[in-house]
Length: 387
Image (tube, rainbow, N blue to C red):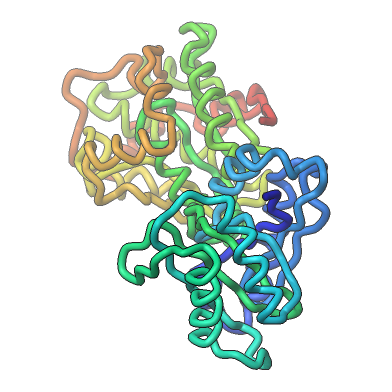
């Protein structure tokens, strides 16, 4: 049986009160953006859910459509459904049609009745439809562990029926929470940090610092692959590629070795702030986790972030490495992140980097380099790519 509609349910959006319409409309926009236009006739808000009308071309593309909707933030679950008139006789008839195509021994009916004007309650619908299935299909009712559940939704002018709920990503629709620049290293952590911010509705602009042509293009190619994976959660991603070797060379020649990593990071944040201004971003996102490397102690984090007025969002701060790796596997970035490359962050890494940087000492060291000139030199050579 061809399914005519997709019902998309949300969770957190339902708690937004008077602002709920804004979140719903953004979710509608994101679904339209994610799906191929020839696969649907319309996407619209109905009572407490979103409704997608599948087009004739989309009717045979259920797997592709499901694959896309699984990655749209804001959707808690969705279902391919059929519709029938809001009459109990028609609902019984359609229920038989749906279940005749399924193999099962036990079943359950689960009704949601958003339209309270409908004459029967949810329980009464369950009982009457269940009795029809018992009579016509000779199957058994099992309310605890059925082989199949027939879901019925009575909403506005529709009566929908379906047998499978497909889990979505949950969270909030991308772009309801503003934009942020994510420092994307190509390692395991930063893609996971970007994913978690996308889930909170933050649109992400990616920024990668590289040392090409002093190194090969491996880190750039890795990051391009990672952005392509993450783009399924926000279509039309932007990736900025910033050449950092010139800045590293100045820091290497003119500042103390133990402060080198701190100075690298401070320069990165300054440049990230310039990209953020251009893209009208409200924050910077990093994949930092407390104590994971030398630059990620509280003392160093405090000194590094002094150079920017933007909030620094660190969604992985309290996660250990195994937890981060697990998430990276789940979002399919782990295998890319562990590919070998020549990361600019580990070039000229000192043997004993400071773990408790002193702000005054760092600022004295920075007087030996022309910060404005270096920022401008890097910024002028930044390139932008669209996914």
